[in-house]
Amino acid sequence: MPRQFFVGGNFKMNGTIKSITDIINNLNNAKLDPNVEVVVAPSSLYLLLVREHLRKEIEVAAQNVYDKPNGAFTGEISVEQLKSSGINWTLLGHSERRVILQEDDKFVASKTKAALDGDVSVILCCGESLEQREAGKTIEVVNNQLKAVAAEIKDWSKIVIAYEPIWAIGTGKVATTEQAQEVHAAIREWLKKDVSPEVADKTRIIYGGSVSEKNCKELAKQPDVDGFLVGGASLKPAFVDIINANQ
Ligand code: PGA
Figure 1: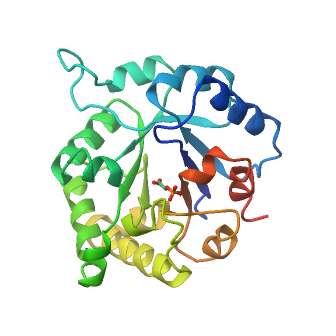
Figure 2: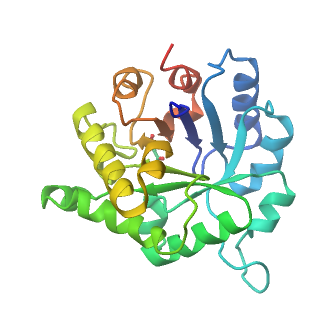
């Protein structure tokens, strides 16, 4: 079974009711490749708005979720709250949360477990900084981020791994097709050895970091690139061209 191509849109802390409604309308009216699984992640404030108005074959993701079921955790959102709002996906471990909000590998792993236990699928982000890449530590850093998750969970069927080199996020400096393929292949090799050959074969590994309508087609041709996590361009009409990268 080939892996289904997957394109996520990470709106980050962008948009207002007006501009998010424009994005919804654009996606609702677009001709999208029916073979691609599409998931968009608006700010939590707009999850319900997007879920209500967006065409139903596109799933909606939170950008984060907490690892406790309920209680005195001001500002946080639970897995149960997502499920009861029709939200079946969440991003976790995005580098902006790891770096700015100082989330460590263990916390990301704990939240991944909580999401999966509550039947919420996870786009699990990993990736190295420029300093780590220049020190030759890319594979080690990415593997360590994923190992922390592997220590907590057994079932990988509801996880999509997003490799996002930090130096490529929002910088316009996309990884070369060779750089992306090299790390994706290494992640698959790690899955094969540390998890199982079946999980390695089935798990989608998507690339994120300055993906645009211009570079998506070449990246999509790489054997271990199973889709994209798109930030800036997911707010623009060009997002449709990225979803349709294989056409
Ligand atoms: P970018 O962001 O496409 O704007 O580089 C990607 C991401 O952070 O998911």
